[in-house]
Length: 108
Image (cartoon, rainbow, N blue to C red; front, top):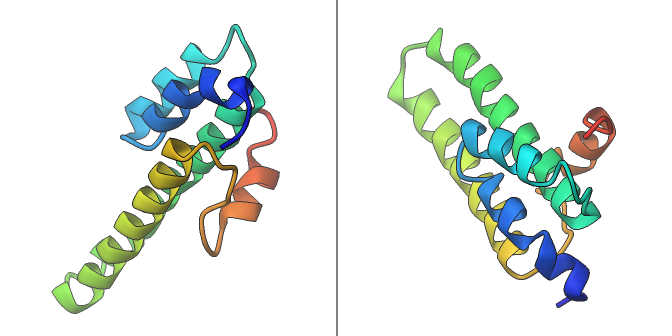
């Protein structure tokens, strides 16, 4: 567990993983306080949801459950991993792309 600073941004961090709308809501929840813990998880959540939509569009071309099923498992694992780290008040990036999300979404 981190300090009170992480506890203050915990709600926005958790909301960021619930959906793309949740990520937008978390961004505006954190807009005034600029909590770095919440910003970290908002960037991670945004990255996961952008990955979901981009890879989802690519996977939908194949129209095969053998391709779609592993894709959905991959996304669910990323969401749950991010959600659990937010609940535990840890700043661990999601596997594979988490470090990239922090670089790509520095504007948040």
